[in-house]
Image (cartoon, rainbow, N blue to C red):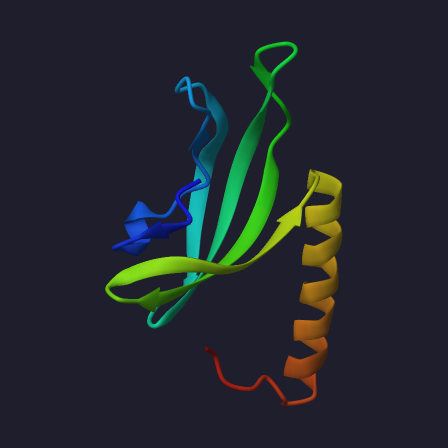
Length: 109
């Protein structure tokens, strides 16, 4: 996996084995925050070694810290299915609407 990189554009979920077989591939990436700490969301797929086909997409949130001119992975959270992603989105939407309605939207990072 590209757990480090000089720029945000270098960061991926791509991972190959010793023979060069792609075991995990990035399908999409969104940058949530930039700066000394960067937060990115990834859509990715893992290879099913038995069938040689990629499994259903998964999602991940990863935090990187820039140090020595390079972003390095500091924390990660995997979302294992579309159903779990939708449940998380539903809860976050509810909470954000509750905070906005209460006038407590806070400041963005």
